[in-house]
Image (cartoon, rainbow, N blue to C red):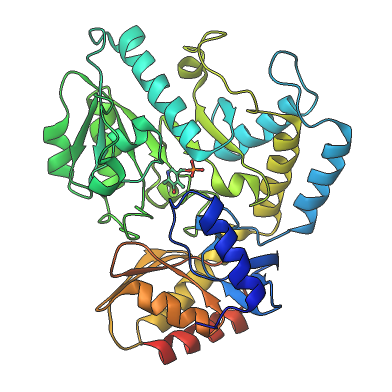
Length: 397
Ligand SMILES: *Cc1c(COP(=O)(O)O)cnc(C)c1O
């Protein structure tokens, strides 16, 4: 690691002194960013291979998204949903058309959209499917990540996320990921929905076997169970398609998106569903003060426009194929996983050590689980930068 200068050290100390220690970040202090580049307080430049966990698919400070933010901020940023705002209708039309759903419910962070989907599925279970009150179950999968609220950690299989936070929320049952027989036997008459990531990002970039997602979709349809896809990390171009479920032509009943929907500039998330499903929420039964605010709508629209017009899914597919191909030639890698530019390197040794060695070579990448390094640069990354990443990895490994 580059030795942090006096200024960087001071900033790190301030953060450690006054901030909760709920993260263990790499010790680089970023001051500005543009495109695929991060700049620290000493002016050093790094290639960003984290993209804020896929929130920055469009690249940092995309001029079009920044302009939308600035223009809207000067007009009106927040009125709450107590009144209507002039940006909401147009944004929702664009969003639902892009995703292929009748309706969307706008929220801010990813986990809020997850909570929305859980509530919607439960409501459907009682009002439509006829499951007895409070008996609805949602099947979730080992190694999942759906966020940090009590409900999301109740769905988790990771002891570190759950320990000491009980009592946890009932109503989740765990099934093995990627195993269609396990899913089949997990379904009961009380199953309302499955909640699934089409590729498990935090779990270590775990790609299910071919045919698994379509098989799960088929099982859900046959058993009158909703298929909820958490595409917060995999969606909006990251995996080489607009959505990772597209790879198997799977259409979820409920789609959850976030992260890149705000272009890395503002938190924007959404839950999408059919009209029949979404209208199960009546006024006052769910909401969010900032959800669907004019600033979020303006940013969301621009973020979508950039994804579509700059053909980010296609670029992700091409760059990802090249990168995985190159990475497979490197030494000391057990496995190269992923799709598009969501790539996981299963290493022999500590991924954190490799991440720190990469930082010294001006590449910012992060471990997820002990032996997995996640590589997920902004989708606008170009060939020379991909090559320099491969070179740096070759030296480090
Ligand atoms: C990041 C993420 C979330 C949580 O999103 P937040 O914006 O951090 O609340 C949920 N699910 C998946 C798959 C994610 O990657």
